[in-house]
Length: 222
Ligand SMILES: NC(=O)c1ccc[n+]([C@@H]2O[C@H](COP(=O)([O-])OP(=O)(O)OC[C@H]3O[C@@H](n4cnc5c(N)ncnc54)[C@H](OP(=O)(O)O)[C@@H]3O)[C@@H](O)[C@H]2O)c1
Image (cartoon, rainbow, N blue to C red):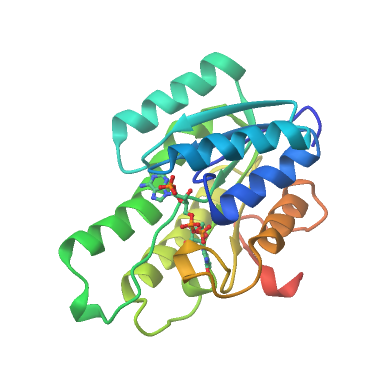
């Protein structure tokens, strides 16, 4: 990955942050983004430099904000011209019975996990030279109780990814589907986020082959 530039959305914590570290270890240039966690984003960027990243850039990004998405794309274009990989990782979830989900909670999940991912892809696609990896979920393949809205968003991510792949046969486009991972989103229950980062890294480096537009389930590889 030396010499390559990778953008990882939502890299101020959890899976995104570990993914940034994994690429940094291999000497990639890493573009990190944070939403509310500026301090966490800054320390993640610092650690990427320590781990050996060829370069780093930290951006504020709210994937729900059209202007913010456009500005982030503009800054990346100005600084790097192009990127090798876009890793759409930013996400959120509210895990409660459907009738308890407020309209705001529904909006936040759909707008972040699905609409935001699609809009970031729309803005960055012209800059991507090798591939796009979308962090979906096993909850995008089968239903889980009390995860109705989250499942809806992640099923959507997989549908979007499959269709994007049809339109862009020369890019590598696929989903990675973690099961439960010990991050803020899951209440720190599950497998270490480093394991998901490793799978994403192997997908990008070509060591894990993925059908175009298809799925890589983390549990099949770790
Ligand atoms: N943990 C699991 O069990 C699990 C399982 C399957 C899939 N996933 C998926 O993995 C991805 C990463 O989640 P995680 O588990 O690592 O959770 P996490 O630790 O809560 O990290 C979420 C990241 O997304 C960012 N983010 C949240 N809302 C955003 C927005 N509107 N715009 C831009 N960035 C935003 C957060 O930024 P700030 O912290 O700076 O606000 C943070 O960096 C998500 O797509 C999630 O659905 C997680």
